[in-house]
Image 1 (tube, rainbow, N blue to C red):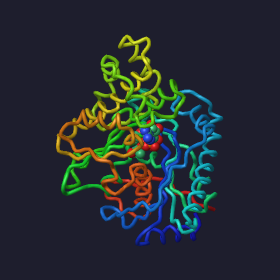
Image 2 (cartoon, rainbow, N blue to C red):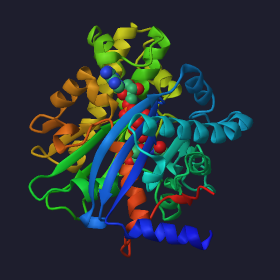
Image 3 (cartoon, protein in one colour):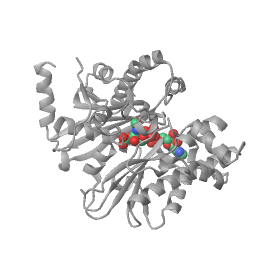
Image 4 (tube, rainbow, N blue to C red):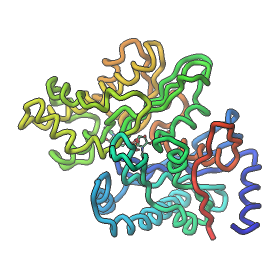
Length: 390
Ligand SMILES: Nc1ncnc2c1ncn2[C@@H]1O[C@H](COP(=O)(O)OP(=O)(O)OP(=O)(O)O)[C@@H](O)[C@H]1O
Ligand SMILES: CC(=O)N[C@H]1[C@@H]2OC[C@@H](O2)[C@@H](O)[C@@H]1O[C@H](C)C(=O)O
């Protein structure tokens, strides 16, 4: 790193506030979430605002390309290598287009926080190979983003978490705690993307019980079934599920997977909650065939019930649940969550002043802010690798 780069990083760190682009491309593979954020301070004094947000949808061919190597235990290493570059360059193009649309000059942006695309998530609980540790892989290298946009880019946030003993996820814990802790109420911050996860923030902020965990499927199985039976990307408005009836025996078989019994916190992905898992449950429930709309109704209930069961393990009624992620637009899932959590107040994340679709991208912007300007305490770590534009 040249001395001038070190000076530039220092100057960014010492600013009272920073303009940070947070990027998230999640397990749903619907598109790239781009959040332009103004972040001031750091640590407990962090303040963040989403100034602009958009999801740039992936073209069908791009999505199919990535699906070819996504969440597969065996596959095409050449394609993996090619897509590492392609995803980085594609994301850079989307960022430049968004900035042009928003009339923001790229040099005005202090840094980009890029999650990349998770290709495979392999906590030990999933791979169960004695001599291998927790592992996870996000591709779309940050150097391509930095060079093509001219903006310092932080990427690959999950490796440090694993190096420090974690599973590489959920990282939501850190930003959630800094931005959304409340002295007035206990909060559950639920995100329903492809996979669902939540952070529990007990009233009053810190405490040993604060945790962030995956709960199992969010939209991933619903999306896969909708693609399979209806050739659509997702069950818009939950309309297909609403036309069916949940199958209780299949639901019980789906919920009997040992993942749901394991202690919290834990992480998972579409590697587990995919075709094989569904086929095993259909077999167990004796369903050789099922009407597609009934399958969707059952999978929507599975999402809701598995989320509710996990939330009830950490907190009782009275906690306020704030929901973000694409699943909050599915009324069938949302109503099933309300039904499964009587006594809980369920809100859209917008009630906390943040667009529910922008929340995860904002969280990565906050992680980058901590890495550049934070002051990690003894037990805390900074995450993300710094990629320079030249
Ligand atoms: N109007 C809608 N009706 C029903 N479902 C919707 C709607 N809009 C979005 N979704 C669901 O939300 C999904 C996208 O959610 P999101 O972008 O939060 O996921 P992600 O960030 O890719 O996943 P993860 O958080 O697991 O990484 C879509 O694939 C779809 O299932
Ligand atoms: C390995 C990986 O990409 N995990 C994602 C995924 O999507 C939701 C859930 O599974 C969560 O654990 C995580 O993302 C969020 C942003 C997190 O780390 O908090």
